[in-house]
Amino acid sequence: MKEIIKIENLSKFFELHNLGKYIKACQNISFTLHEGEFIGITGKSGSGKSTILKCIYRTYLPKGGCIWYRSKLYGVINLAKASDRQIIHLRKKEIGYVSQFLNVMPRTTAREIVQKAVLDIGYDIDYAKEEAENMLSHFELDQELWDTYPNTFSGGEKLRLNIASAMVKKPRLLLLDEPTASLDNESKKLVKVLLEKLKAKGTSMIGIFHDLEFMEGVCDREFNMKTGNFTV
Ligand SMILES: Nc1ncnc2c1ncn2[C@@H]1O[C@H](COP(=O)(O)OP(=O)(O)O)[C@@H](O)[C@H]1O
Ligand SMILES: [Mg+2]
Image (cartoon, rainbow, N blue to C red; front, top):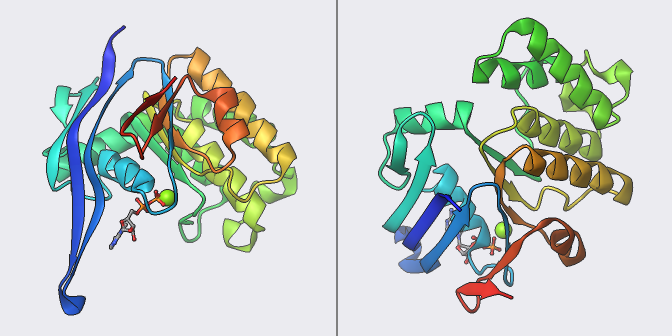
């Protein structure tokens, strides 16, 4: 099986100068994600799980180690060293990230948000319209809300929209940081169905889930922060 991500000795720390503190967020993390595979990361809170995903998505600039990503745009590229411009392109076209927090774009309707995600990859407007409607229907977002601004949505509605706009892109690599943390069971099931669909279409994924039962139902392997290895 081909590797899509190979992390070698990834480390990230924070220096809080005003407090004279030095925080190790994650240290010497190494693992490989194969194409089409879904890895779950487990470990106690504060162990550095989110930091790993943020380093891959480059929300955080890693301090040490390499994140080799086999991209479509640039071939094999070290995400720890890639330029900001390259990262912007990869985020638009190849790498998706979902967390439980939503940044809503001002004066953009739910429908426009999902459509824009599809347009960003390079599809035409007709396809984007169709895919956006399919996705909003799938997540059972009330049709009356499609053309309204999400700032007034409930937490659960915002979250479903968030997940919808990441998944509608069918990214090559999808990073999931506790996306289902505040969802009801019904919505969790909708997320699970889509994760399975994406996986069947070849999306590779790394996820963090507080609900271990949910995780075990979707992931192929589990990377444990405590041991720094896979649990079998
Ligand atoms: N931006 C940041 N500034 C300072 N410390 C941070 C920052 N991000 C994470 N940390 C610290 O790094 C450690 C790991 O955090 P995190 O990756 O969020 O853990 P997890 O997701 O496993 O709960 C924690 O001690 C956290 O406080
Ligand atoms: Mg976290």
